[in-house]
Length: 184
Length: 102
Image (cartoon, rainbow over all chains, first blue to last red; front, side, top):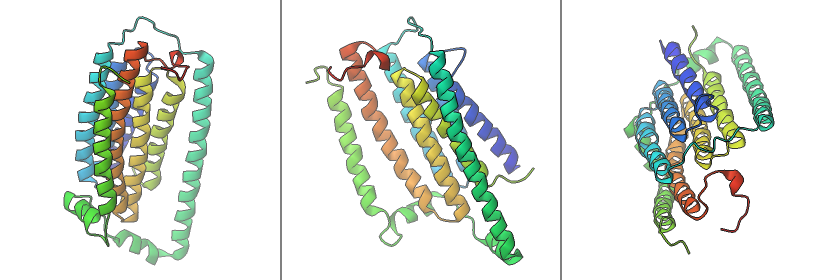
């Protein structure tokens, strides 16, 4: 069951991410934004499969909600027409695919190599270690657990939390200042 | 079918990150470049949550919490910048923004 859901969400996330970036049918930014929403929701599904329930909810609220609404507002505000439908330069497209494909290939092989090594080590340590790994409790990212991890864990992340709140304030002031009619 | 393991999640994360990087390299619309940046941040989030789940440590999820916050702030400022730029130059294509002078 879990693997079926994982496959569905993973394929959906990767496919719609591809459609955000290189959609052969439409170059309209609104289409890209809509496919980005699909990607965000699939990623939130992956978070649920990983027992990160709070982050799954936040992912939908913040990304699929707030951030994408902001994107759509800006797209409408700028009123970008599709008139100058510029061609993607074929050379840059091919080179981009080659470079990124090579990067992904390196990443994939290194992940697989590391995983195989880990599996070998577990087998070398014998059944006992494997069972110990099976028994290790599964962390559940409930709101309570995340809040405790954030605030009550040997000093926790209280200072970063406060810094982030200042960052949000600065970002808000910056956004308001930048959106003024007369930019000096 | 076997259960998804850490390497499966890391591969999904790597694929998402690569696609985001491709968008930043290939596309020339500022808004789409921005969406690709969001994609890359989300790929990192998937990797962090997967690590947190398979290592039995909640700190990865706390990190993702901070990343989401910073990403939201970044989007707000970045989009305000794009709007300001569009008002000055009437374009959102990076090719037309080749000079630093406004």
